[in-house]
Image (tube, rainbow, N blue to C red; front, side, top):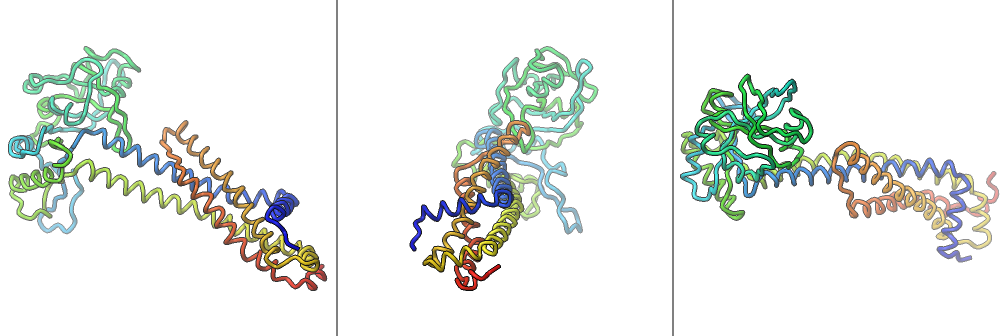
Length: 409
């Protein structure tokens, strides 16, 4: 007796409905596994996209020079990047005048301070920099004005607030220009509010205060060292050459002959993005691998259910074989039952993964990117699990001796 595929599907569906609870529990394992994998991969891809967007918004063709790895006499382990003060304003001026590929240079001195205003306070990043910072870092002002060269040269106590800082100090959307804030017991007059940029991973670009660099050096640090130097390249194609020119210049200025002993680091947006993508990619794979363990458990559950079904339906199998059913038709029926379980679980798992991603984006503030490739992979994995874990029970069913099967009690 030749059974068509349609007949096999009908038989498989009826067999699964006989034990609804057992089938539902078996499907649940696949649902949780695939839903977890899809949800975590979507969150990982979303986080990677958000970080990349945040890095790209730092500024066009940006090179960042920071205090780098340093090693003292007799030290075998280098200290962390940025822990030492090695960059000066003279270094920034030298890059501006001696490096032809540098279109604009904006040194900065930053730190976190407790800022107060009219009975409110917030802890935020305060950046001391120069007027050309707006060009180098693609900064726009939505209200008021940015610091100018006169205020920079005279070390004026003026400040430009990020929108988040403005909201924390004066209320959401409040008028801040002309108000007074206090940083390290010094009064500053607010002259502007920045355009919102957002950003995660490296800190929100909306939660900061910008003041003149000379003001920061005089009233906040009392020193000559700066935190970093932002350099804008003349174009995208000159980024690598600009990095090399800056490195050679600073090695010469700092009297360092061995580049491996450099007390500074020179990174481009591409370097930062590659590092961030590598970290988020590795984390995503790790989380997905952990979630995939539940898929293995779900597959074992399917095999257990199908083996139980073979035992319970031994006489049925014997009867089918006795009236002419072929071994491949018996194995096909059980294999289709297994694949049907995982297919249903895969469909529900995709819905669960989408729901988890949506909930994380809606209420957790975490970006999620559910791609079609992940959905296609989920269905492929579910079908594969059904075939792999259903193969042995199907072969066992097909290999039963018809006479012995009919005698089975």
